[in-house]
Length: 270
Image (tube, rainbow, N blue to C red; front, top):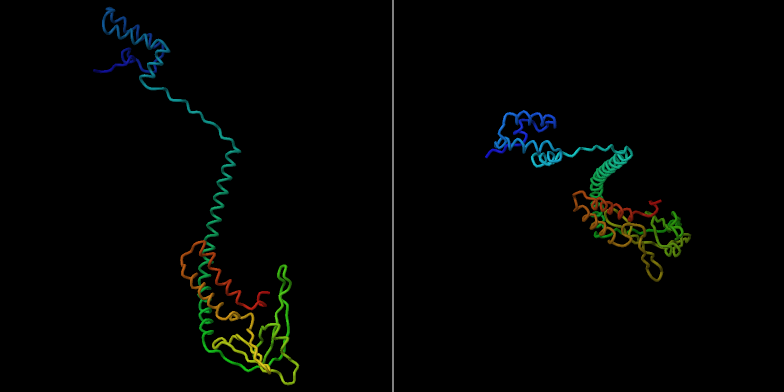
């Protein structure tokens, strides 16, 4: 069965006006004098629908679907456009700055790895040096003095005691500085022990008439025995195991340098 629309029955287009519909109907109905003819019935039915604007709209809706909604274009507020572009620009600038800082941290991380290898070699050398038999030097005191360095917040100045012997300048305890008589005609002998390779003084002994008192040399890598070099060796080795860059590894790569700095005599800090 072939479906024929009312427009096709009247022989007009879907955009025909009311006048065109009436004209087409009058022309076609005049050619069919028999009112009971099937064609006449269709003509009257088509004209009855299409000549009524309300029924025509309903028919068009069922035939073609709802008419397209008009597109309404709203002009955007220039202030909103500027604000959105400003936020986007700031976000791009922030991302670019973060990428720049990340590249900078990666370069520093690579440099610090090389520095940490040097520190590792230094820590290995100190550890081996401490384990070797010590060198023994027979010394006498030449001069002694105290010196103040910097100022600690809420704790006053840092005061260190120094003793100059025949071959060394030692950082010693204030007790030894008080006990030793630098002005005596016959000065008391001092025994200084130093490491085998680097010749770093570790202890100084004052041989008294009744007993021998041994003091540690302060402000040296061996002020606490092998503890400092060993800690430096272990920490640096662990840090170097993490070869890939990350923010955590970047922050940790400065730890060996910090430990090395703590092993340096305090007067180099000021």
